[in-house]
Amino acid sequence: MTVTNYLWSLDSYLEEFDEFGQQIISYTNEPAAFGSLISQNKDNQSAYFHFDAQGSTHQLTDSSANITDTFSYDAWGNQLTRTGTSDVYFQYIGEAGYYYDSEVDSYYVRVRIYNPATSRWDSTDPFGFVDGLNSYLYSHNSPTQYFDPSGAITIIRTVSRLNPTCKNLFAYVRWTFRLDKWPCRGSEGIFVQRVTVNCMVCDCDPKVPCVQNNFKYWEAWHVTKSKSKSKYTVVHDNAGFGASGGRGHYRQSGRVKFYCIAPEGAPAQDDEFSKNELPRISSGSAGEGPCTTSSINLPIVPEEEMDKKKRELLDRNPADGPSKRVFNMQWNCCCCEKWASANARP
Image (cartoon, rainbow, N blue to C red; front, side, top):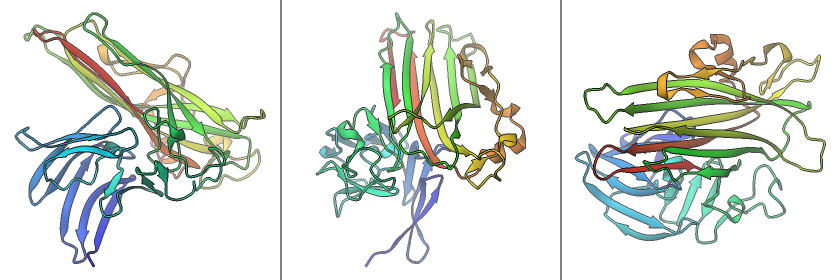
C-alpha cells in the first residue's frame, strides 16, 4: 500500500512525502488560508496554475508559459474535458485547496469530503443543522454563488459588478460573512479581517513610471447575538476599484476570523477577547496614490500601525474561521486589442 504524508500550513498544502520521507511534490501558495495556489514542482519540473472565475483549474503551464494541460467542469465539479497527462490534484476549486482523489472521484476539503457525482458532502456538517435539516447539502445547492473552503463555513457573494470596460474601468463586489451558529458564551463578538492588496497602475506612455503598492490592513465588525428569530449573524464586506485608463491590476484578498468577547467580569478563554484587550481599530485608509483603499463606515488600520501586542492577539485561534474572499481586476487600455476583466471568489 502506498503511503503519502502531507505538510500543511494555514490550511494549505505545502509538500507531499512518501513513507521514507522523500519529497514527492511541493506547492507554492500565497500566504493566506485556503491556498491561492500558484504552482507545483514535481521531479524538478514546475507547473503553474491558471484558474477560472469559480477558482477551478482551467490550465496548467510550464516554466516557458506553454500550456500543458486543460480542464473544464460543470458547476458541481464533475470533469467535462481534460487534456494533458500531468499529475494534478487541485482541479475543481483547486485555487482554494480542494484536493482531488481519483480513486474515489471525490475532493478532500479539510474537515469533510465532497462528492461531485452526488453534489453532496459525504458526512454531516460539523456545526450541526446550521444550514437546514439537510446537513449534507453543498453550498446551498448554488455552487457558483456560494463557497465553502473550510468544509464548515459558507461565504456568500450578494452583489457584484464584474464587467469593466476601457470606457468604464470600474468593478465592485459585496460579500456576506455569515456566522451560522453563535459560538460564544456571552452575547458579544467581533469579526476581524486582514486584507492584503497588490496593485500596479501604469500610464500608456512607457516613459511614465508605473505606480506599484503592496500593503496590508485590518478591519473589524463588532456584533451582538441576534435576538430575532433568524439563526444567523451576518456582516457585509465590500471591495471595488476604478481607474481612468492605462494598464494595470488590482488584487485584494481578505482573511476573516470571528472571536468571542468574554462576558463582563469573566476571564477570557483561548478564543475570546476581554473587554480591555479588544482591538481598537480606528477609521482611515491604507495605501497610496491610485492604489489607496478606504473604508466608509468600517474601522480600518494599516498593518504597520498595529502594535505587536495587537497582532499577537489576532494570531490566536478564533471561535470561528478563518474564511477567505478575493477580488481581482486587470486591464490594458493602451494597445489595439483593449480589454478589461474582473473576478471575485466566491
